[in-house]
Amino acid sequence: MALLPILEFPDPRLRTKAQPVERVTSATRKLADDLLDTMYEAPGIGLSATQVDVHQRIVVIDVSATQDAPLVLINPQLSAPESTQEREEGCLSVPSFYEVVPRAERIRVSALDRDGKPFEMQAQDLLAVCIQHECDHLDGKLFVDYLSSLKRDRIRRRLSKLRRQEATAR
Ligand code: NI
Image (cartoon, rainbow, N blue to C red; front, side, top):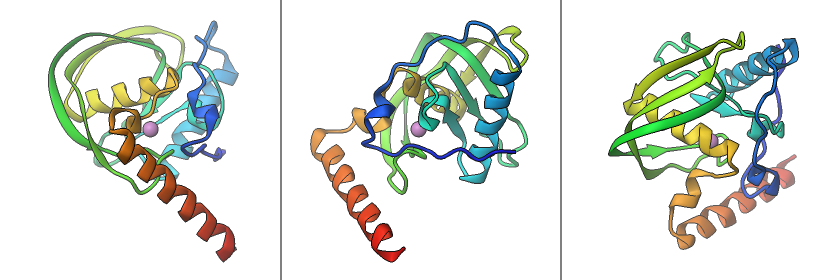
């Protein structure tokens, strides 16, 4: 088990576009497992490789109440967005801020699983939101990008203030 440090907004590395995984190897599986450990420990319901400064198209998700249904998506592709929903979102890279973001209510996902096997699934509700949020990370996009620049700047300022306070407290 390895816990990976999570980059925080506005770190410019969060803006990197991740590369497709060409071959799922034991290193890919180790990364997926470390991402899951890091996500559960945080705790969170989703984490992308981008957030731990690894720029490969891998995300992990678990929206189950019991946190025992890990989902690994490698090279995820989203299609057929249907309808819209608005939910409050948070992000491990934007700690302690929650805002409502518009997303598709239902989407289709095709990806490789942890073993490199292709699969397809349909997602809705919270799972659909989580998948869209994590896949955005792979394109260098954050949920705060959907907010007004005023709100985004306020979050940026408050986060740097929090970080300064943490540094002084240490
Ligand atoms: Ni996030």
